Length: 200
Image 1 (cartoon, rainbow, N blue to C red):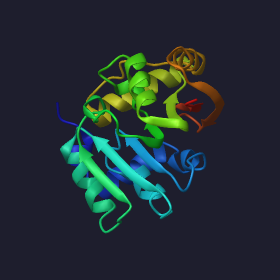
Image 2 (cartoon, helix red, strand yellow):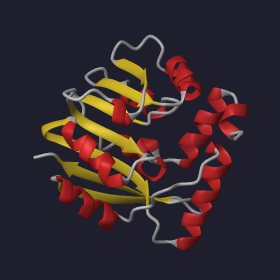
Image 3 (cartoon, rainbow, N blue to C red):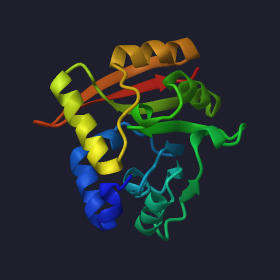
């Protein structure tokens, strides 16, 4: 299926993405001096922002080679960034991070959310964090707007929408300890939430 980001210059798509998704807000909750995994890093917008702090060591993974090519241009020359074309489930067992970040990954995952959380748990050191940014589906008209936007931009429809309570309950069942849930809203756009979970 033809996707809008295949037709847009990389810089224009990245500007649109930053307007839709409040990445600067997400960054406020990401620790410094950490080894971080960005799951579904896409065109690298979040990694580009995070890598400005050179105390962070970042690994970004995504299955979409076209998006990764955009990411490579965006973070070119930054020694604290490594990009890999692979799926999350193909990440080697035993590779450990201080935190795993998943921005709008759960609702596009081909795997059930519980499998994503279990996989994340295995790759986070004790005392590290899972940081998830998702859409709150509780406001129906905003949920449908987000579904339409996802279809237009990426050619896909979200498969899983979890409320903050559903995500927290699922994370607890895997072994995480919820630490914080916070919300962000822009007029006429999606209602975002951020869940932060400690890996004991």
